[in-house]
Length: 321
Image (cartoon, rainbow, N blue to C red):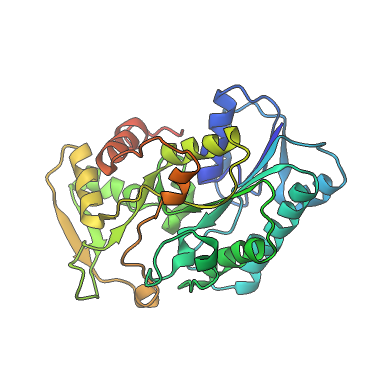
């Protein structure tokens, strides 16, 4: 039995689907649907039980689910524009602490979603070493809520059988419900397909040309492979960056999208909203040396190959993962 939280969300649903396709039969999926249509992400799966997020912890602590092989905790408030710090602390910190504590007390593998948002503007680098994590300064409340949990683990030396995955810019199928938090690829696809143009934010730093802002874009299928690696290697523990280790520009991303549709490379640059100008990351690039050091050897998909697979395999036919 494996428990997946955030199981109807973007990353959680693709992880859960992958487990299901590999033959996992006793899957317990945890989430909250609200008004979103993310139920479609799990509608094709045959799982043991779906559990509402708000009742899950009480039921788990009462022993209703027994002892799972692992808990994969992908559930969180992932809105980087959410400024209700109390909400973020409750969902991303306190909830995670309680779930992790149960797993530690019951010797259950715990794999959870951290975020590259903890690195802030990147001026302190992108190393996932514990001692450097303690000094990071996120740019937004979401990043701070994720850093709180990472710090709690590190400061209390709660290594156990815990793995944290600091996701960089993940994209791929099943993200359609995320709205403004979905990837540039997903949001740009309709206009790119219909009008052959992609719109990107202008740059407001002299070191970066328009469209030259750099991010570590990582495909969801590569994320799943890393999760599977840690499921199979339960002695590996700690907090790890999960990115390709190669920053690419937004112009590269837009070009890959247009190329995958057979369109000319037409990119327009628009003003960045005032409310995010001072909180915008101009450069992210995962240091994956720690991940490699524990034995992960698979290569990450190139940006061009990943975008092509996403567009032609999922966006054009309108398919979920």
